Length: 398
Image 1: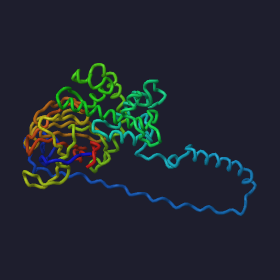
Image 2: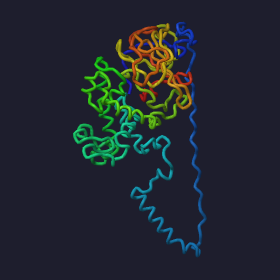
Image 3: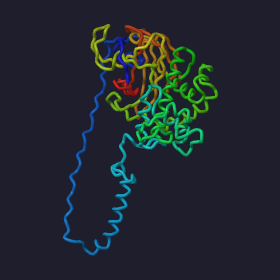
Image 4: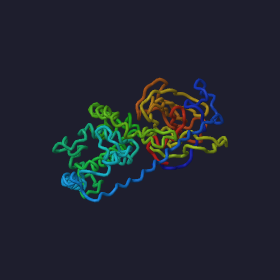
């Protein structure tokens, strides 16, 4: 959930590289912007048909007398199964499209993964799913005597992180819902620690990588190494290799209305998402012109780390008039549409054009260059060249 703080402002802009024309980024002015987010029409609901009434018979015929006992027996068995969980209304109606199985994850656990990942910005549903996949293959049968359940908790770990999240009257690492939520709490606590270490300059690297490393070798080992230790690499690589299986957990068909269904496609570009100016129409504090604010401003201190929101290639890294020091990343296609993110008003660059980056890797430092009233990050998301509200793409509500 974003938190609103004091306002720092950025310019209303034109193209993703800070220009009306990619070849001349230095010529940008706020008045050049005319883009508006596209509209999206929602399909109307389809009405259900009336039930047909069957004609009543005067009495059973010979055929009915023969098959009736069998039918009654079948109905009795079906009723018994329904009462005991063998049949359910969901099976007759089909699964909810938003809750279909993904990878090795049964549909019923998808909401739990999303809920567990809501505890922090570094951990995503797909990361939790891939982690559990690596630990147990989503099977309780894979557990050892010391490491229990799908997330491999020890007794000591469970006393710290385990709760009765599914409210069935017990807290158990063998209850998948409880295990998912406990792993989310543990990962988010580790993410908070490595975020602090990286902010202090004690460690470097992607927050996701550092979190996974802390999970497998401990925060103290990561701190001593100053980066992801060699001993943590096998586990980290195995988890990240599994991430593509669970893309659907973080991508819910980005739409044409600013990505309202694009939950957590991107990782946070700064450690704390404090919104100081939202996406949408506004009057610019420096020019007085009311135009589309093409991104969202995150308040952050001068020199704070700015990280890539997704794997991609640096399309532009340089200085423009309106955006100041700016980075544009091309993330390739998502659901057939080109995805780009931009990072503006930086105080320093840590990448060059043409370089490939991974999610969470450093791209620059927070600053106040260009048309800006104070240190902040102006962050944009473009889908096929159209500006989108970045917050849904980060899995963050307004």
